[in-house]
Amino acid sequence: MIAYVKGTLEYIFENEIIVESGGIGYKIMVPASVIDGLPHTGDRVCIHTYMNVKEDAMQLFGFLDRDDLSMFEKLIKVNGIGPKGALGILSVMTPDDLRFAILSEDVKAISGAPGIGAKTAGKVILELKDKVDLEDAFEKKLQNVNNKTDVCKAGDEVSSMINEAVAALVALGYSKSEATRGVRSVEITEDMDVSKLLKEGLKRI
Image (cartoon, rainbow, N blue to C red; front, side, top):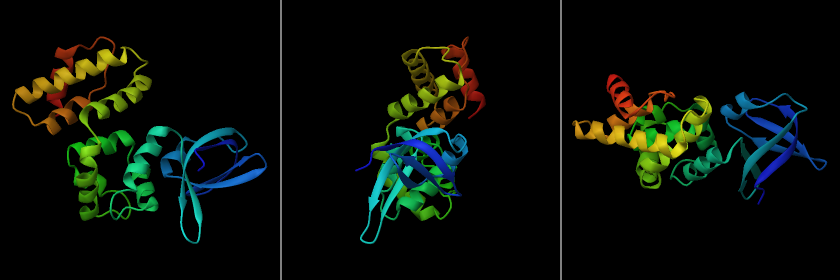
């Protein structure tokens, strides 16, 4: 199995790239999110890959980080979602967005992906809900939030603050999915505490 390909980005096509490594050009199918995040041709890249072996072909699917790859591997295990369907979902949704859509049972968000109808989106939610927990979703989100907010707070401090805000909203009578969406939509800043986060989260529910 090829875990990743590190080499020179030679070609970029609509939904695939070719990376040259060790004199071999690897054709790798990628979601639109990867295309958007690629450097220029001729630059070095490291693509995390999944090898799909069929009777008549071997295909490589690639991602810029392991979180995307991990979500891709979960999606292809869902009945009715093949590698191309999983690519379609990850082309329009980040792993963060998908995790919270699953937790909040947001069929509409998932069915917005090309080739994914409401019935298939429902299967994604049903089969992955037990494999995506709230704590893990926040932890993954925080890794991206830290990049977005200049790492103003330590990850464990932010995680604790978010969990407290969600718990407070639930105590006020909101569902956990409503509370999660409200708090998640708030951009965490350096001067923010639980009280401010709670107030901002309320505005967004």
